[in-house]
Image (cartoon, one colour):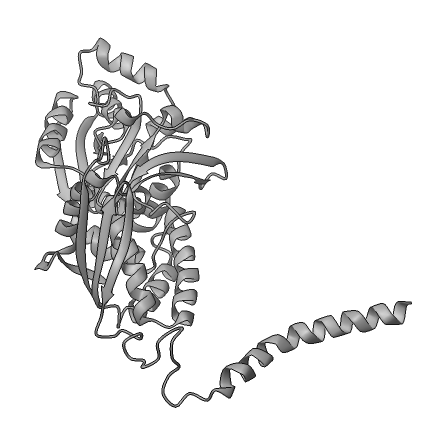
Length: 399
């Protein structure tokens, strides 16, 4: 059987490439590059795939498509899962499934295989997306359906002198454009932190930097005064902001399977851009715009986390987010040091602060009626005043 294998280079997909080939299948590996790799890592993936028995290896550069179809909406909606995690790697799966299906259907493969386990979210994300974009394609999930312990996979590869992942299999590390996640080891419990050696982009961070990010209608377009496309900006910030320790965190939350899960994550670019974008929105949007949008952003992030990338409601939400970004243009200054990103300044031609001649705490707007605030206060207080009066009357009647 000709099989296209979704290949990340981790332990599960390394084992699958070799094991399926040993069973007589014609295995072709495919890596959908959504970021997080350099040229050396891409070359190493190719080399190891062939050494594991793959007949060919292909790499599809999906970074620009990832930003346009996914990340721009996570940014527009200020999505942070559980209030902290910027939904880094899991956000890629729907798009990766679509790209893999496209490759498999175009070249008439007999089946598409992935390395998702039975205990993780990705099996749902892949299967859900493939059910929509590749309904007639045979999908194989050997790691989920015939599970093997990670130690057993490692031994199987070593016994045959086949390459094992660089990380050695202790941690499950996934890197993408919007961040990197670390699972396994200490994250299997809620008590202990990861050792410093487990971190990648923020390890032993000592640097201190200030960045200037310019947005046009919610999309980052320039860094430190120089125009740059969003993908290049994100990759640069992951490296440069990561050197300050920004973006490191832990996320403990609800999995698609209904159980609790914990990961460590590093998302330096996401931390800088989300912080800058959120503060810029405060300058140019009304309070109601922001409140409603943030509520819907939480819904959007939850659905994407659950693997519902192709649900039609997602397109409806994206249309609303796009309409809210019309005035989200300007520049934010972000100071990064000691693992913290602090927005220290903002400018925008749509600044609602600059549009008013009032100065908070100093003077009201020109033409404002001094009696207005007192009247408003009384209106706001009236329901609580009536509530208290009714309670007092009820107490009197009961005596």
